[in-house]
Image (cartoon, rainbow, N blue to C red; front, side, top):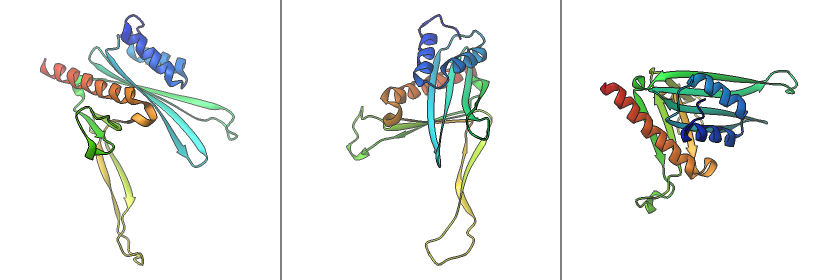
Length: 196
């Protein structure tokens, strides 16, 4: 990763602050950047709970020289006893001009009290470039508690290649603002490349 310049150093610090295999993430990200200097970035550490297990994973988005670099690292148990861990790291680099959708969904707590500058509770950032469609299905039902009919399924279908949730409560207000700034930078880069 290009260390020269404040943005490269800030990216390194944000990865280290996340604390999830920081040197591994830095080295994988550096390989993806291949010497390009970061222009904007977003680091998102997420913790999920699965019954009695806790899983963490990190996603790092970096905009550099017209490319969107996505690095994702998570781990899994390597043996039956759960004593050994295997880290899985993947990277993808996409031309910013191929990004066809940057969706930022805002959540506001107590909207009835909203005034300009009211803090954002959370944002959901969705970025799409391939038209990948994610479908979240659930069994459909009806209001009758005695009904035993099969009502099929209901769900939500969304086009997205990357989807991140950033919460002011869990991640901090600075992380929410960082996600908004990254979305703006990505939009500007995509529009600039399309205009050429």
